Amino acid sequence: MLASRPVGRDAATKKYDILSALMTYALSRDKLTQRLVLRLMSLITTRYNWQRDELSMGQREIAKLWSVDERTVKREMAKLKSKGWLCVKHAGARGRVTLYGLDLDLVLKETQAEWPKIGPDFVARLTEMTGVRAQNIHESNVVAFSAKAQIPPVTDGTVWASAALILFDYDPTIYAAWFQQLQEQGRDGGCLLLIAPTKFHATYVQTHLSDAILRAVNRIDPSLRSVRIRC
Image (cartoon, rainbow, N blue to C red):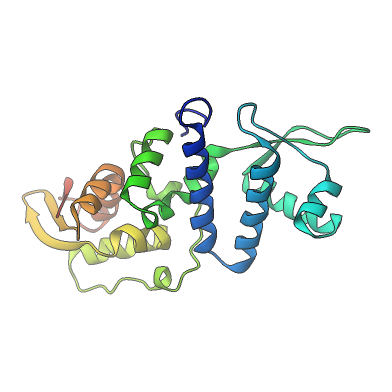
């Protein structure tokens, strides 16, 4: 996913953007996730080597940084490894601490649904940096915690309302961010026409999420062969 690591020219901006994506992701989650992400960000900002993709820090030093005991460090680091955000490059041995790598591709993939909350300029920069061309709904590992994202769409008998319910079941977070504000305008032969609130919204959904919409729509009406989103 990551087209280039944040090194060299514009490296500082790229690093800030990655940290901003993590921050916005954390703020949309529960308190335990917020704390876990904050602890990861502290490791990144204090000890992570972006150029070599290396994080080398002993449990005692991490415990001091986090103001916790070493048992908490073991538990939290295990959570980060289970999420796939941290990976062990070299296991620790006598006299040597464990060397970790940071899976930026997975981090950005999981935070992608929150990018629009920062702004269209941020989405454009992250899209360019990651080389993203499309995002399929079933690929998202994001777990929604916000109340808004938990409200399913109301079916009214239209194709879009039924398809929207399928998209909600796939991923409530992405549904709330991108699909909830779409409205069915009608159809043009085998093309379903949808209306978005802004030009940017329409362009983003058409570019990155139209395949997912079409799959859901086809389950309701197989005669529809394409989807067009307008402002």
